[in-house]
Each structure stands twice: as C-alpha cells, then as structure tokens.
Image (tube, rainbow, N blue to C red; front, side, top):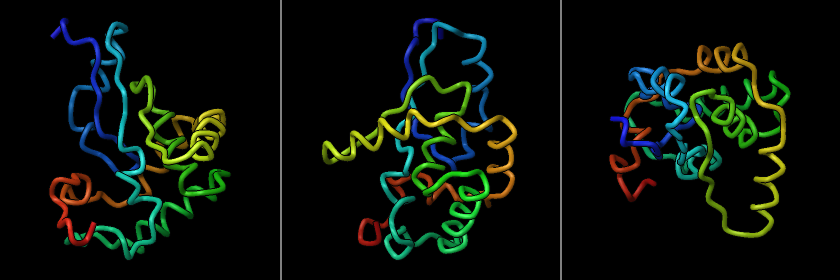
Length: 149
C-alpha cells in the first residue's frame, strides 16, 4: 500500500518470522517506507537469566542463551546485549530501532552501543545459521504465560 510509509514491527536476533514475508525485499525497493524495529531484546527476556524466560515447548533456553553468548564472543561482541542490538541494527531493511530504558545510564549505554560497528552481511548469516528456529510461542509475548514472563 503506497499510503503506508511507516511501520513498527517486533524484531530480534531470534525472530525469523519476517524472513518468510516480502517485507525485507519490499523495503529495499521502497525508499519512502521507514521500518522501525522494536522488541530488540524481546521485552528484555534475551538479557535476563534463563530462569526468567517464558516456559515454551521446543525451546531450550539455556542452549539458546549459550549460543547467543558464544556467537557474540566469536564476532567480537562483549555482551549478549551488544550482539542482539548489532544484529538488528545491521539489517539493511530496518531503518531505526525503538529501545526502552529505565535510566539515564541506560540511555548512555544505548547510545554507546548504537555507535559500534554493524555486523557484516556474512556475520548476520553466520548468526542466523547458528541459532535454532525459536517457536512462535516464544517470539510472541502475547502467547506467554504471564506467571512465567
């Protein structure tokens, strides 16, 4: 729809759902369309201890967290937060990120992280190919059991 010029979508390092759509290709052919990615840290879950992750069938939270940390280290990223942010920021079809924060210190940290070099296309492919496909029940917070989230 040519009248739609701004979209805000949930997207993070584990979110494969947009790859099944035409959105990345459409965005690259529509310079008038601006895409904002939110939920870069999956509402903070990706930065939390795995005991706080929602309990979802077919998801080994400890394995995913370990893989994220290992991939980040192999790409010279100091923290999981840095990997998660740089992965989303490196997507050519995403124009801007919406990040939450609770303090001035978090704002400063976010600004510092946004200034770090992006991942290459090859790095993004490496990350994506070395992570398991997360169940949609994990990627969609509305499906979480609120007692576990």
